[in-house]
Image (cartoon, rainbow, N blue to C red; front, side, top):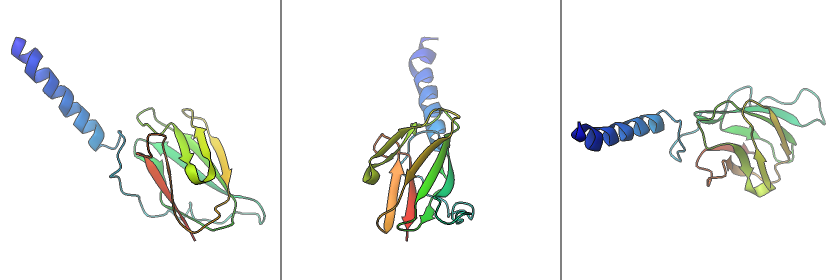
Length: 137
């Protein structure tokens, strides 16, 4: 029994940790963004109002991502964190001084207007280990 306690238990714990990280439940910089979804790139229904985009924070990260935005077009993000198995408990968008907590299962609105084109990375407060991408045209 001492062999089990000293050797096997730590090995089992490491194996479990590796399995959790490989399923995307941990923080990972290596996750690749999916293709933009049609819903995420749809235009607002009413001119002059911000484009509303629903984002979920799941065990896989911020979804959907990437999302295409237009420079100068106001955007209202509606974010809902649906899991505790993530370090993405807020959204951080440094370029716009946004650092907003995301309570579990509660939609949170964040509004901003992209002011320059290019790749805009947002993510968690842990150095954006869990992140998403806006492609601003």
